[in-house]
Length: 563
Image (cartoon, rainbow, N blue to C red; front, side, top):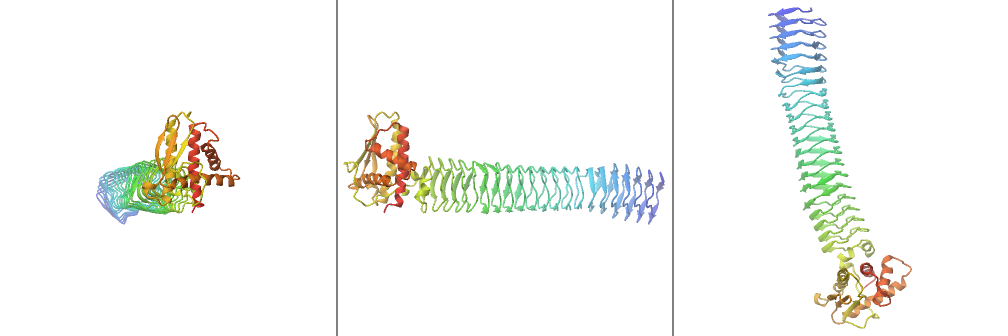
């Protein structure tokens, strides 16, 4: 039937199975229940025809033209459509199960209720509106769906790799099990979509709206979610390694057992979310906004925070192992039993923070401001507090031995400094109400030396609190003289000078009885006592400063032995 012509007639129940209809013409026909299975309609023209309940299964449409036609409830299962032209044609309810489309343009075609289940579409362009279409298990590699309205379309297990979906409306679509690797979904509307078990690895999702989306076992590795919006979304067991979340908004989300490793969270907002079993390993947070979240089994291990400001948060048992928290501002926050081992909080500001029972071994609190910080029973061995400033910290339950391993801590917590035992010491100075430490006038930097002496004097003044004396009765620094030599005048009240001075006698006895322990601090105190007794001179300001700080550490060791 090559080049046959059928004009203005009705073909009901006609059978054209395995016919060669190459370049045939069908004009103004009413075709009902006809069977064109496995036929060749290459180059054929169907114009102004109505086709109801027809079968085109396995049929070849190559360079075919379908003009002003209407297909109803017809099937094209396994058919091949290549380079075919559809113009002002309706395909309502047509089934394209397993069909193969190549270089095809559906523009101007009505596709309501069409099913592309299991079909393969390559280099195909669709019209702007695709309502409630089924693409279940179809392959749409490289298809251009940019700006399409695919509201509530069935896209289960569809292959959409490298598909252009920028600006598309996919609201309410079922994309469960879909393959969207390297797809472009920038600016797409993905509200209320089902992305369970979908693979979006490497997809571009910049500015897309994923509000109320459901993602379980979804793969988001290497996705670009810049400025994406996730409002009340659910993410469970999601793999999202290397994702760009910068300036994205995650609000009121439920995130469970998800891996957000190596993520970029610059300027990201995570607010009022439930974070359960979430891991942010090695992720970077630059000026993040983390407020109102609920944390359980969350890990920020090795994460880096810049410009972190967090308040009124419960971060109990959260893992910050080796995290970078430099200059962080943490206020009214609970970190009970949190893991901050080897974390870096250099220059941070902690106010009303509960770190009780926290793991702080090797953590850096250098130059940190600690206001009303609870360190009770914290594990702090090896933590550094050099240059830190404390305004009320609680160190109950921390052993002196552990505190000694933390540079700078003893200067922050006078309660760790030893009380003086009740005894009859042998004072090293006849003056009972004033202790004068006089050094060689050759020191070149009296200012540095003076500051060191002030620190030393403040540590000693802490003893008064343990002696139960009123504030005006405690030891105090009266004045510092720097010329011609450096003098520290430590004033005491009544007979308290005897007890303060007696401390040095006790220290000498302790050093002599424990010379087998060659710890740096005890060696230093021996040197300092020798210098104070005039038996040896001081060589430099630096040496004296080190000795004074070592002496301060040694004073703390006395607390466990004093009554």
